[in-house]
Image (spheres, rainbow, N blue to C red):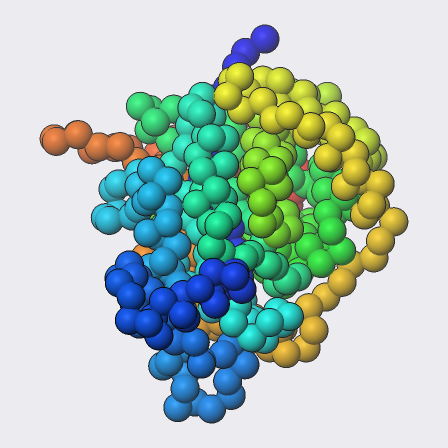
Length: 393
């Protein structure tokens, strides 16, 4: 049985605040003019996330930055390398304006996005995830809302190989996304079934016209493949606020990715009139997991996936409330206007950049794509129904 070693990264969205016990102790120490670490000295105990006065927005932004700086320091103390420049394999802590702090149950939660470095599936990445949450355990309280999510970016190969997909791999993932879309829809939590940030691909166009698939806010985002990091991004999963949840969701994405590439027999399925069921989807993901290295075997994944199916398959989709939808529409508009995105400079994808050496030019992925795939089965191209990824050269 062949073993795949994909490289991946992830983005976690949640809200953080100082734990009450730590917060009170810090107040007393500051009032007593005791020496405290630099990251706490300017802490603003008065500002809240509920402010509507525009004059206080700068103070809110300053508090968000204090919190991000604190998280970075705590992560450093756990041995996690923090982002310094674009080419470094390191963790990032950034702002995520799409998150609505006023939906949390306390007025001192601040939005944050944690972005992992490029992680090899054959490395001990699960230990890094545990260290991330251990870094926060004593001082930081984490919460989530239905607006939070967990995105996993994946590329083939190892860190020593260039990560670009070839056309055959992309066609298989493309087929997998469409064949299993309904099954994935059913097992996801209601708030991720038809969320504006991860719309079902088939919902954009019944035939999945590639003109319409040039849309990043879908359950599977292909738009990074031809630019930047060269990843396929699995966006459908809900929030994660513990190490165990994060590891299981990464395992889910890696198992899905591997199943689409090596397990699913697309030539046998190309003329089928049916689509995959949740139970079949779960078995495919678990088979994909078995094709990954020992370091990416995730304990309890089978039980967790079946629990998702049991809990969610009969539940209807939940949309965001109107003010969240309006906020999302405005953020999407601004990101389109100023060129920023989840793959932009503020929040680069949690995935490898293409390795380069002096005097060596890495081939762009377009050069590996047969014209039939580019013209009929590629995000952003002008024509082509869903059936064409199976077309023979």
